[in-house]
Image (cartoon, rainbow, N blue to C red; front, side):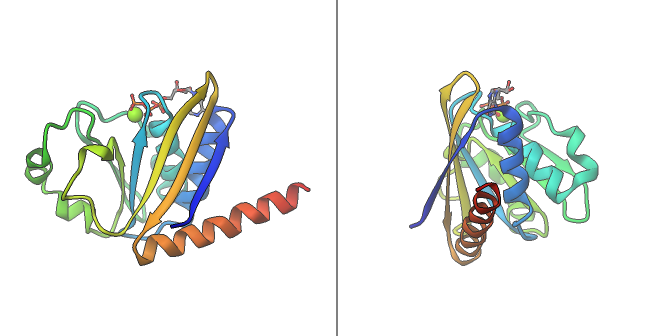
Length: 165
Ligand SMILES: Nc1ncnc2c1ncn2[C@@H]1O[C@H](COP(=O)(O)OP(=O)(O)OP(=O)(O)O)[C@@H](O)[C@H]1O
Ligand SMILES: [Mg+2]
């Protein structure tokens, strides 16, 4: 499986990666965010929303207490935070299918908490704290749709690199 490793040197750069990946997503895409507390998952989500539902990007905040925030747009973004999740039952109660398999984009913080309910086709994005302002972001894809998105992301990042050299 192809894995892309990205280094972000600031919160703004992490948000920019969110925007880049967000611009490649399709209605129904599922983005599983994992990793350290304060790793930048919410920050990254702000970038995704800026690309997918720009009119709502200013609303992005941690939904830790609400479990889910919905950001309206042409394609809506369902932003979940499963930090407090104790088991799949909480997710079932939420009526997750409507979101995970709906026409919007799902972005899930603490997706590690999901077991059986993780959709087969998904992007996994892991955040590692590597310095006060530095994060290592690792992206991989599972399933046809997400593998295609990974290929496009690789091309896009290569083009950015070329433009800078
Ligand atoms: N390179 C970076 N990328 C992302 N955030 C950074 C970076 N450098 C510093 N930060 C800071 O780290 C914090 C990241 O917070 P954020 O809420 O996005 O993390 P999180 O992964 O969602 O945490 P939680 O697990 O609590 O939900 C912010 O205060 C941000 O300003
Ligand atoms: Mg968060």
